[in-house]
Figure 1 (tube, rainbow, N blue to C red):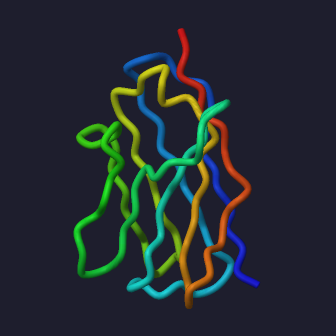
Figure 2 (figure 1 turned 30 degrees about the vertical axis):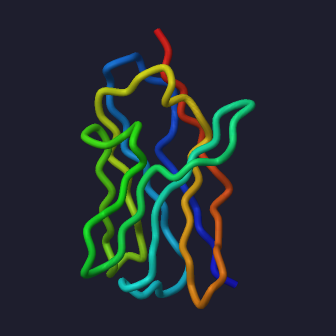
Length: 115
């Protein structure tokens, strides 16, 4: 069973930066989509960013230009670099990967943007 473990969440002031990491417990081919969703209180889960080899990364409209997704395929890891954070970025961030028409999720990591 593929398992994903996120880390790097926390409390940050508006305008600050955070870097999230997500590592899988077995080999993840670079061609499969791997990335991040988030869910704020009272809202639906929304796409943040996704990356697969040979294609440009895709970003949600609200994070384009501020967030960057990257992968280290040798380490089965995906990262999310978040800059210029805003209070509306506050949410639980979930890592995911889609393998053979099945989606696997991490347990989530809380990001809180507040002064």
